Amino acid sequence: MKNLEVFTHVSTAYAYCNRKHIDEVVYPPPVDPKKLIDSLEWMDDGLVNDITPKLIGDRPNTYIYTKALAEYVVQQEGAKLNVAIVRPSIVGASWKEPFPGWIDNFNGPSGLFIAAGKGILRTMRASNNALADLVPVDVVVNMSLAAAWYSGINRMMKTITRLHKAMVFLEYFTSNSWVWNTDNVNMLMNQLNPEDKKTFNIDVRQLHWAEYIENYCMGTKKYVLNEEMSGLPAARKHLNKLRNIRYGFNTILVILIWRVFIARSQMARNIWYFVVSLCYKFLSYFRASSTMRY
View 1: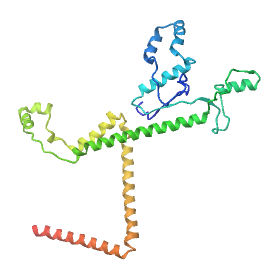
View 2: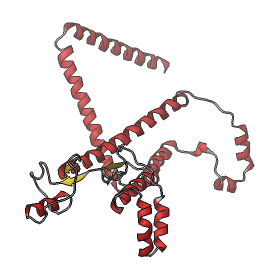
View 3: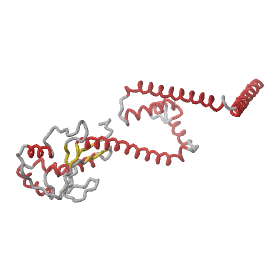
View 4: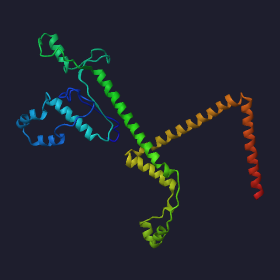
């Protein structure tokens, strides 16, 4: 999944319904999911049914229990990914999109509404003090999309922050130069015979740095980012297009500045003429000096 930008996992608000107050965190399960899966591989259905009540504990059913396990797996396996976990409550019909009341299944309260409307369901056990935690399906969709967007942006901001810290750390080394003695390296090169010098080349004086940097950049694209090289021609065209746009914008900007500040201002014109005259005199002096040397 080299092109994966964000991984969004849709869970449920009831994943930790055994708690009265639920924070926006992933609570560690009492049993490691991988070990549980390995154990279930050799168990028969009867044994699984026997241990299920002990596994789920104070959760009402296996659906809620496995939802909690899934969140933990996503958190552990997606530590290096942009991950968003969305926890909708009871998903109901749409609020606005594609139109009010849209629904296409019997899940959630839909089946209850239909059964009650048809006269099949007459009574059910409930509490007058309990809240009906319904959420429209289009709100869930919008939340999932927004969470995916924010997870990608947020991870990028973290990357930029780390990059900035790295730049601050490297500033000392990128702002200074040193001269190292290489007598031992030169001695070592002289000790190698011509064949060994080709096999174990350590003479960086033969290195063409422009070509090396170009290969370096191509290597990061191919081996680090795992991107295809077939898109290079289009990328170069796009880069040239952006460069031409920048040059054109700068040219237009200079013309506008000339038009507004120089062509309409006597003081600006005087300063401009002074600068041009000074440059002309400098170039004339430089040419005269060059002629005198010959």
